[in-house]
Length: 398
Image (cartoon, rainbow, N blue to C red; front, side):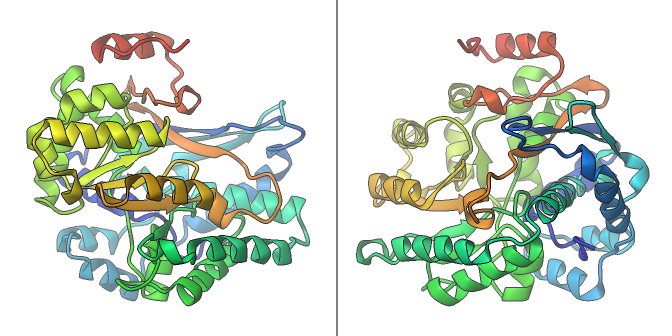
């Protein structure tokens, strides 16, 4: 079985789930799967493996949290005891997820049900699809090549002028496989060091954070801000509502705001002096990262907030050379953090699957993000997208 622990997921799933339990326990949602590079030179033909994927998901739905796992979560300062009590009786239910093969060779994955009971499906289901695909298409993976590439990355990070540069692992959902993911993390901890003195800041994966004694990292994902389109008082205020609801839950903890649900310009219009002071920083996940960083710093300056006291997190399709470029441009001007995903946990010389599972509906109405990278948008209702652009004054992409 690929997934053997419900902790084998990203921390932000738990931080969002706690908000759902306390503030939106009745919300109903729907998620859909997409492989962005399906059909490209035979990449992403997942239909032959649909039964294997279903079987792994059935196994996932037999899991429950172990006492040691609950104790680990409870020890995190921002996790509340009633949420841990809820997790103590929690199990994923396979009735909320369906996987079907399509004539195109792709698969359709639909997750539909109460948000509280479906939010933990996304990351393990994506990890299952990846591992099933690669163990069938690469029966003897070139681990030697993977180690060589990882060694090159570590060497680049250990350059003498980069001692303060830290990276984090955000690669659970698109990893080559669970065993390779763990090897990569153990190598990074050994070679780069962790904690205050090391260059490895931690991982979004809660299970490996617990096993390796490193920091679990994460705050919010797009689905949280998208759901607020249906849960807030009115659409135009949904971004503000999302940030205020988050602050209500965490009272200053987990203070990184996601900036690209409606594009950077709409984010900056809502991210006023109050939020500049209230939140510790912002995360970049689409569009040009250099332009984004310059705009964020300028926005802080214009808001009379010292950007050197704020953290900018970069997490969009990063490679080590790109991280080094960003570090050199912004070091000393703000606090910096870098979350690297696919290029860290699925770089053995094979084309990775560009797969996502995104929320498309909440309480029966469409929800969407309008990314600074249009190819990242995912919504099946063009009328709603047009309305969203109008409400947030966002230009139609060329």
